[in-house]
Length: 445
Picture 1 (cartoon, one colour):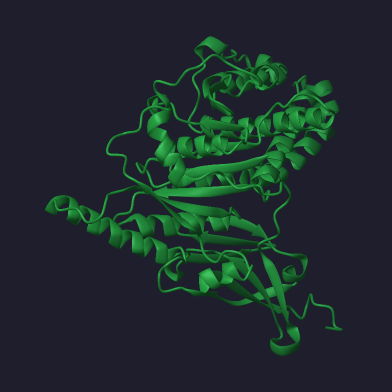
Picture 2 (picture 1 turned 30 degrees about the vertical axis):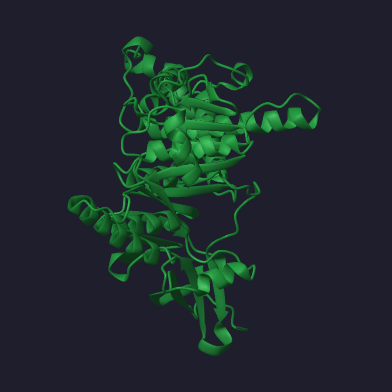
């Protein structure tokens, strides 16, 4: 299923752009689901007075626990919200049930579902569970259609995410948590199995049951599945910003953070653009400031007027260079209802089709042993700046920090037998140079 994640600068109209994107995609003939993390009611305001409409197919067969039943607000357009409180309570109850023996031994009282309030970070876990549930529903629907069944499910998923810094950390969470579980769980499981007979016979201490380990194993599977979804070619990110003095800088940092986690940006939405050429001095000044910021934004995305080679590259069939910037005019007021969303949907445009397959590995190793005696690891970091970069080698891993974002990258096998000889940032790519370690490198090289 094609998936578009909408994020951007806080207060830039992300929810409105997500709704317009979903509407444009539905109007193009694709069955579209808009999934929102919003709790403040912004989505209700955007679609008022269209919703909420009665739940419609495919709700009956595909609404899982992490999200509310989708409602059809327009032809081929469904809307649903992530049900974080319900998801948190169900997961807490499941963990307590699996750890019941330990809780009873410690004299701990279980937390009742009616008194459980979700903890900070619960939204992120609910979103990951919902992403997997929606994609599983899409797989079932596709299998049903292939078998001659009725059209069900969705072709496109549009997700309204939090502001960019929070969204980037959220997208990196499956890999980070999976890494923690891989390091902590095996040793814990082995120790528990080895000590179980002795503890049970000598001390009578209950050890977590196998079901508890099965819970950890299920978490690992869920994290791996969500990571597989995020890393698909069919998943892209759209960044929303209202052009202003700080927009280009904020989006540059967001692009760098997304690139660090291997996420692909397919468009930047310049939202709430004021009309140009006004006779009103105040409006003309505000519009002029916006246009200057828009020019800076285009140049930062590789779409500035001083880069004609981009159009030539696209015309030659070499694929787009840089990131397209789409302009959305100011509606004059906050959009309410499908009639107000229509012009914005025309400006944003529908979601394009992309194959649902694993994305190509963005990190590549260049063999320069013959000429320079080096291996070069190329890490694309579009938007990164030299002063924001930091590298630390820790064993067989490379800790890369870009501004406020950090990722731990396992080194390819060949680079594990090398020492870091230097690094440089050039044309949006970090190149880390590795020199073979004579103590570890095969002598015939």
